Length: 115
Image 1 (cartoon, rainbow, N blue to C red):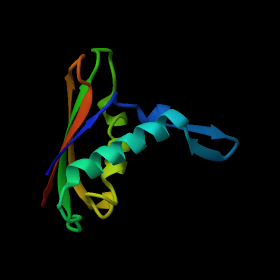
Image 2 (cartoon, rainbow, N blue to C red):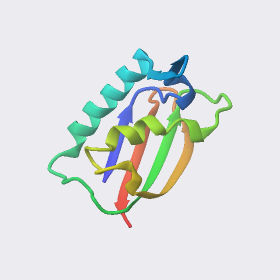
Image 3 (cartoon, helix red, strand yellow):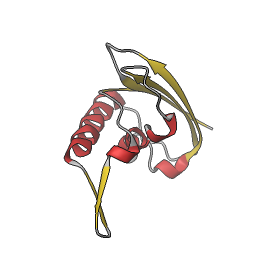
């Protein structure tokens, strides 16, 4: 199954704030996650939820060529498919993240396949 999530990818470091010992998600990150969840629902179709181990390939399209660590950008996208496409994200046994650039159309493209 292939899922495409449109919007600028957001780093895990920019998703959360911490006050004292309480960690919470920023409004911008909540809006982004809600958008991703709507997009996943729209693309799911009649696909039943996957309950078996999977491999996932993520093509991460950035809007510019600034130096970024690709490992910090896919968490919110994976969280958005959990409970909709995957029963739980612990089912991901292998994840490959590939970095690309597309100024006009930043996005995630995720391919999920059973192991």
